[in-house]
Amino acid sequence: MTSRKSKIMILGFGTVGQGFFDLFNRKKDMPGLNNFSISEIVDMKYGHILNPRPDLVEEIGKGKTFEQKDVVSAIKESDADVVCEFTWLNLKTAEPAYTHMKTALELGKHVITTNKGPPALKYKELTGLAKKKGVRFMMKGTVMAGTPSFNLLELLPGAEVKSVRGVMNGTTNYILTSMEQGKDFSTALKEAQALGYAEADPTNDVDGFDTASKITIVSHILGWNHEFKDLEIEGIRNVTPEQARDRTKLVAYADRSKAYVKPMKLERDDVLSGVRGVMNAIELDTDTMGKIYSMGPGAGKMQTAQAALTDLVSIMKEKA
Amino acid sequence: MTSRKSKIMILGFGTVGQGFFDLFNRKKDMPGLNNFSISEIVDMKYGHILNPRPDLVEEIGKGKTFEQKDVVSAIKESDADVVCEFTWLNLKTAEPAYTHMKTALELGKHVITTNKGPPALKYKELTGLAKKKGVRFMMKGTVMAGTPSFNLLELLPGAEVKSVRGVMNGTTNYILTSMEQGKDFSTALKEAQALGYAEADPTNDVDGFDTASKITIVSHILGWNHEFKDLEIEGIRNVTPEQARDRTKLVAYADRSKAYVKPMKLERDDVLSGVRGVMNAIELDTDTMGKIYSMGPGAGKMQTAQAALTDLVSIMKEKA
Image (cartoon, rainbow over all chains, first blue to last red; front, side, top):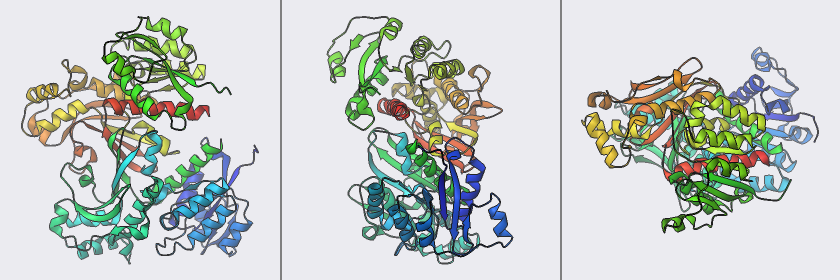
């Protein structure tokens, strides 16, 4: 075993990348993390940054840029041990993140991602490649950011999951919660957009694709392997204010035989019916515990950075 | 490293002991657990059972008993690596479980317990002893059985907890939930007793001592070290049906400077206000995630056994 620090390469230095960089620097003296250093960053806008200074976010805020570099070439030339993929979501082709991850895994680098595209669309190929190369392909941040979700199973060894249900999209749940007061869908959507909870093109959220990508990932992790393209997906565009008031939520469900996303009226004593605003929740129905729940933020700069940090420490533990 | 299986000794073969024995035998072929075997059991009623057969629970159900043996002598003579303490709760002296655990730790054996007495009353001494002997003192089952509680922090490396709140006693929450329909405390208590949710002597539950022992344990694990004897503790005997309907819950709270248990009226959008019946819940307020929640059963034969199994796999992982 060498005493050299393991090197981390960050791809994409937007909100998540900057959040992770700052969180890592704040927490880097803790046991485990003190064996890592962030050795380089590649970003479309800011360029290729080698051995970044801790005040990098401040530097680029003042307009500093670095030499441009093609991302795939940078991965190939890098001596990093871990690649953190934080570029943008593409639920049609998973690109460019898919090529980034594939390149990194083929070179025997661990991959951590918060990007749902490649895990949802190319799960089998990428996990198979990681296994072949003896590295980890980690994706906690793709499902409910750092809020415990599928990784609850690490705390329940031996337990078998019979089914999973979740309210896993903060944007739609925020819209449904505000519709309870009588607003129709388009008014509530506009307000959510004005507050920054919904994007200008809201389709990934309101038509259920974001939620569907998450339940697809969970289904793969549990070995059920439902494919994104085969999911029954219905969004919330047709939900009425009356239905919202009647505890209608955008529910993701999976068990061994099926997986779907659709608005469903929930019972009053259903824990998921009490999930308010942008909060997310997951229910695991297990053989030993019965139903257990985790709730918390499903997005946010620091919350998503926490997920990547959790994955990093998990890789470190396995190496130790 | 020897290839001999690590041996487990069980103290106390009541509901929890039998649940653990059966769960272990059901799951023993899983990675990790296949390095363990249950080598002996000591119980006041059934005696000293060496190399138990998998159908032991059935055997003793048919009236089979074994030679009586003093528990402390049995621990001293045992070659077990792990002692699982499942005897009865005593929140005054922590005995006899305290002596059992101390004896086992002094002999360099790992201790797993679901018994709140010694962790709540003798935390510093027993964890200090375990540290000195290089073994683990594990107690997941003391707080919300196998439902993730303080161990959520294993999934949030680097996160700092600012405060903890919880609804951690199923008996009182069941009583408060049924009081919402207008029943007074003593009627609801009698019904809970008839259903087996409350004990004949309900004081540990309804006067808040059970909840207090749990928040004490959490406070120790988080390094805040509030002592059980110093806690402000108020139970639910004086809660009215109106207050119950107004979302009054028996709340446990701790931060660095204080810890208490008392009935509190919760806001409508407080996640804890939606905890129904015997279900338990915990809220961790952290620097990276903000508030996250875990909910699920806080008791039950299999649910408590899962907690001990989780602890066992955790010990195994550390050994590997």
